[in-house]
Image 1 (tube, one colour):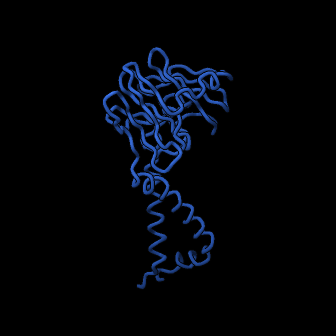
Image 2: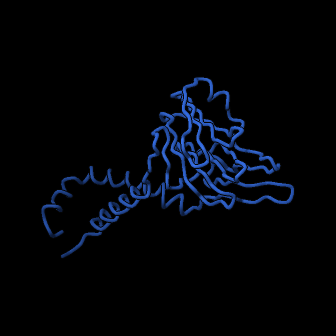
Image 3: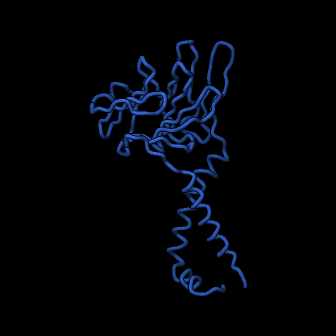
Length: 212
């Protein structure tokens, strides 16, 4: 049996798409306003940062509509998929270290605890603007440490911790993660759909015949 190279490519593309879909599983919480996300997304349109007293780092990745949570070692813990009706959101920490998230499009305000659970939800059409973008790219904790998002709109954004002694890179999404786990499969999916639509007749012939 002679195997065409493009036939192998199609199969590899399908396999890649399946892996990509498996890698983006979302586990819903009891309330559907947000969802816990197991997958770490690359930093694209990264805005908003906050650090609580326990050292949890909250970082807004607006391109994917999530707030990603890390520890002080830069390890990804979980993500919070925000029900923002495909709109923007701002967030801050309250006096109890709960996360307050306000959306602009559906005027929702969520209070989320350190475990990622919603403890209250309300409607307020001014909350998004009241929170504003004070913590858009930087946050100072109670010890005076500065946490800053560097290169937020460029290809390799990262988060640093700055104090009187040094500057330490805490979180940096690698090029491999950016290309092969997120953007690359997305382009592969688009390419597969285009190829399928342009070669539908030929694909039907392949399905009917055991030989190529």
